[in-house]
View 1 (cartoon, helix red, strand yellow):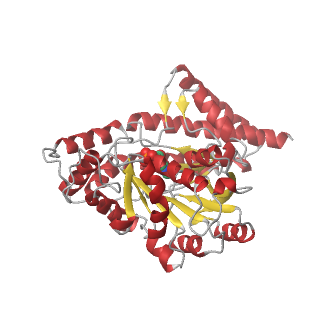
View 2 (cartoon, helix red, strand yellow):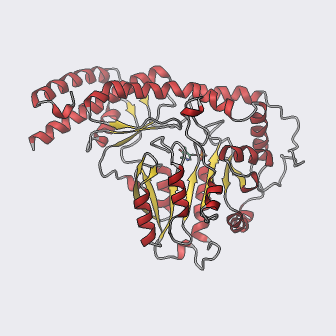
View 3 (spheres, helix red, strand yellow):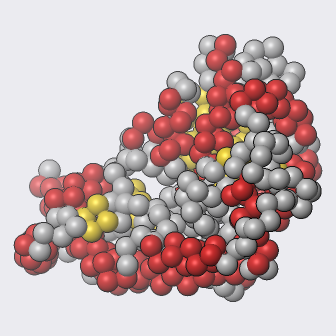
Length: 430
Ligand SMILES: Cc1ncc(COP(=O)(O)O)c(C=O)c1O
């Protein structure tokens, strides 16, 4: 029976039972963690053995560049081709610039603040106000980045096809100080859901400021949880779509191998139009001569030896898939019948979002902490840390091993139920 339909005494009885169970957890002094969207040690060990088989006795790239030396500002073509095929973008438009996509994203925002875009007389820092649309729930680091530049963030709710496009179009049409939108079009952080082609086309074609930009973080472009293509979301060719919609310069795409090989020790890229690349070049040339091409060559050789990135991603999915299933089965079984929460069912990525009973997310977070379970802070997935409903929580099942995850998710579900009952009882009192 739905919790809200139970009478007060039944709610009180249930609460007492749950609190008794939670007391036993308290006595265990647990140290569980579902906060980190990181590959597990098992996934990393697998990649280490793969790299051991990569021969690095020849340091010449396909184009005859000695990767140990300076040169090759845009990165090695063999790796640009790998990213190109992951993102469905021609390799010439892809530049490998760093080991982290966040670094490239931050650099790009800095350049947008500092240097006027083609056809614009002013850089963004010289405007009275710069605003960005932020689909929510979204990625906290994107929001922190905007905040660090003093860019005003406007939340836009997500639905299962991406951001609410009616609202996005309405806002952009009437306010030319809205200069961009942060998006994670594939297996978004934190809902795990992907944007539809229709949403992407609307973003790329809608009426907006001339220098409006879609920042597309494709962190999870190939991070499917299932082998069957019917169970995977499609990657849309963002630069092609932008060209087809008559806005070739509207989009910047980012990706990295952080959750394919090693975070911080992988390779990352930026892809964008010819005009945008020409705009970027002077400041890029002042910043660097070339990135880590030794690592690029290692990655290109690894992917070639595997016959593409797919087999590597299948190996990751074998570890990750059961963890997501465990979480979703626990939610279905322990929360489904109560009617107090809803959650996403991602086909890829690293996260599940759950909406707990409104007004209880921060209490769930605090209670988890008290009982030795770390989860991502309530509100973290919203600009300025403010979830108006105090309801969304991000669950990261990837890092703990299965036993730990089982214990963590059982404890989490008990706490979600406890806090919902407390709130329902409070509501019925007032
Ligand atoms: C959407 C998104 N973008 C970027 C990153 C970080 O990427 P990188 O390690 O390439 O900086 C993450 C990590 O969780 C992420 O979820």
